[in-house]
Image (cartoon, rainbow, N blue to C red; front, side, top):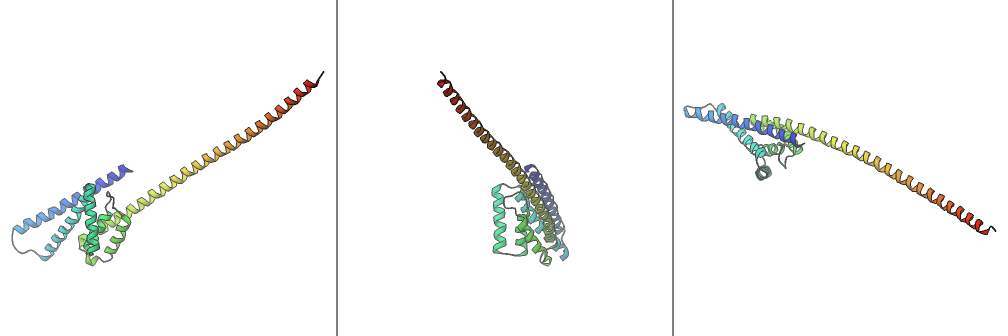
Length: 209
């Protein structure tokens, strides 16, 4: 169903674009207030840093869904390497989000689901924005898994129905062929008997005076 996949991908691109723009606005607001001078509360600093981190996640995911195959492969390879070589909540979340994002060859909802559940089991190691991203993408991959499972079930059902129809047709063909062979044998037997009778009649006529 290419059209449906394209629509989902377009919607995700739009969502990520809005996220990037919104978080970019947060960064600009930070710069604006920073230019006014004066001390900034630590809580505000933490929130701005959190928004900047989310901006990085969303910007990369936007590039992932909108990029060409080479760019997609580059992002996937980098995220996987970071997760394996320097495992941490942040590198694992980044890799899980890449796996959870549809529209590229390495998308893997099942693996993403496992990783996101593990990350959400230790939310104290994540920022509030990271928890939100993990929660949203977990919901998304769970829906993907359900949809994919239903699609496989329908394909299997269609395949079984087609196989049943094909078996029935083959059975009818075999039955017709058997009937044709039987009729040919009976016709040949009748022809042999007729030939024998004809031969006898000819022999009798030749013996008559």
